[in-house]
Structure formats: C-alpha cells, structure tokens
Amino acid sequence: MKNIILCTTLLLSSTAVAGGGSAVPTGTTIAGIVANDPNFSTLLAAVEAAGLTATLSGAGPFTVFAPTNAAFAKIPQADLDALLNNPEQLRAVLLYHVVPGRVTAAQVMNLTTAKTVNGANVNVSMMGSSVMINDSTVTQADISASNGVIHVIDTVLMP
Image (cartoon, rainbow, N blue to C red; front, side):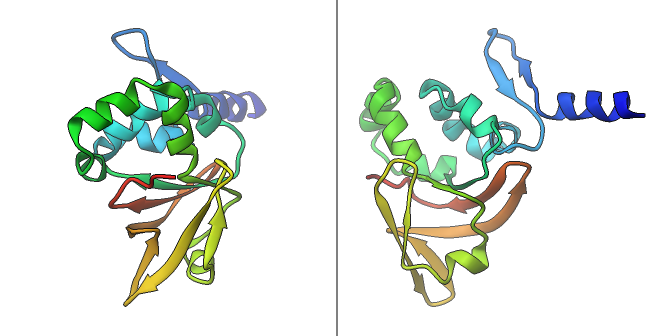
C-alpha cells in the first residue's frame, strides 16, 4: 500500500515529456495546473522561457496571480516577443506575480500591499466587489494547488 501511495505521489508531482522534448508539468502543482489549462498557454510558455517551471513545481507554498492568454494579448506583440526573448526581464516580471506563502482570497481582501518574490510590492484594493492587484482584476480566486494557490487576473502585472 505504501508503494502505491509513493508511486501515485511521484506521478502527480512529475513532469511529462512533450513532442519537442520539452518538460511539461503535470499534476496538481501550480505549474501543473497552468500547463493543463489552455487559458494559460502563454503563461506556461513564459514560465518555461524564464526557467521557472521547477520553482512552480516545487514545495512552495506560493500564491500566484496568473494572467490569462487574454491578459497577455493586451501587451503589444512586439513588446511581448521582446519580453519572451529576454529571460532575465521575463523572470523579473513573472516573479512579480508570485507572493510567498498561501494567501487566500479572504486574506487578499484584507491587504493593501503584498511583497512579491521579485522584491517589489503590488497594491491590493477593492473596486466594488472586485479585488484589484495594481490595475488588474482578479477574475477567479482560490484555485487550490498542492504547493499554493492561484488567483486568475485579467492584466499582466509590470514591476
């Protein structure tokens, strides 16, 4: 029985090799959830380009404000391409979306700022019944992951 549980745990926290030989996260980690949701394909590409897949598959816990493909589409294509081709800058932008620890929606609503892994603060406010992170609206909250929580946002946060 212990072997079955250990094998299941290893399978849920592993990565799968996709057609091009790239490692695509699987399971219930933040990286795995992002990899398995087509609304986050641009975020997944950015996480992989920045070399953050292993981090977001790690123990955490992390809180990630995850921009959707529509959020990335708000960035002019030339600027997005430049960002995706500059791993250092991309890493800084992505780490600006990550707060250490597991911060639920109820906890976020009681904050005015939060320090990100990037080292800079994001502003947290309420606009009517919506939670705002800087100029971005949280469109879905409290997606539970084995290593943290994801809050979906509609705009990419820029440090």
